[in-house]
Length: 280
Ligand code: A2P
Image (cartoon, rainbow, N blue to C red; front, side, top):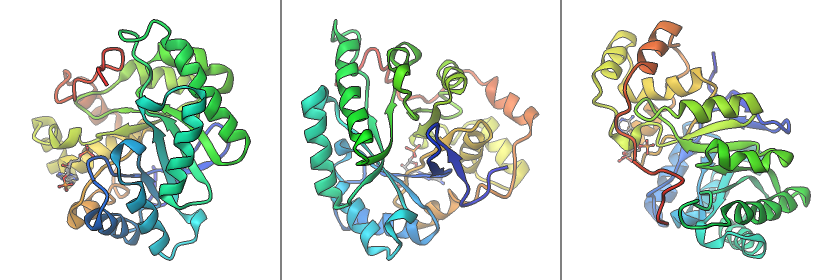
């Protein structure tokens, strides 16, 4: 069972705290700084941001103000879709680091693959972006590199220099069984964005019933469901009580029969974003 403060190990040996704090939809400003500071106070040691979220300055500010040594906090950011390619990825990384105000990054991800329906040369574009990422890694400016929203056919061409991480939408309503199996087989750690289905999946009767059974909320069931599969959840919240609730997932386990009940659920509550069809 994973305990609070425990880590997953990335393919290159880097340790990554097994619960992360998601910051999507939290815009630059005092509310975001306060929420991240609260999360750090409550023991989160892993903050997930992206250039696209427009909150990197606030993330950096909160990390610096926490009084924690830099190496005690794991920070992830991502290169946005308009910056794909070798040169622009390198420039985007510099901008991200300037905004964060940090000396190094822990994990840098390609936010979305170039979509096959928009780009005939999607594979080449992803390859150029990935070449910049591997260079940043070799220079020691980032401790691990990976991708987000990549399906097996997007991952395949990158396997020569293995992505350490694939961050995908993943919750009981959008289980990503094929991508999870592929990543497990290749030693790629999966991180879950929207592990609570952005709140959409929390009314599900099975999750509610399991919550009752364990004296937990449906949200905590979703997060524990991730951990049981070796998936690293990144719940987002600006509400102190929820930020805390989302850390109380280390004092119970979901046995195989409960995991099977969730596995048997038909898809519900996904965002509908297909990485091969996205229009952004
Ligand atoms: P808020 O930020 O207002 O607290 P996800 O991480 O899946 O994208 O879900 C984030 C959404 O779920 C946010 O709207 C957040 O609201 C809400 N949320 C976060 N934690 C909980 C929780 N423990 N119970 C219910 N809703 C939650």
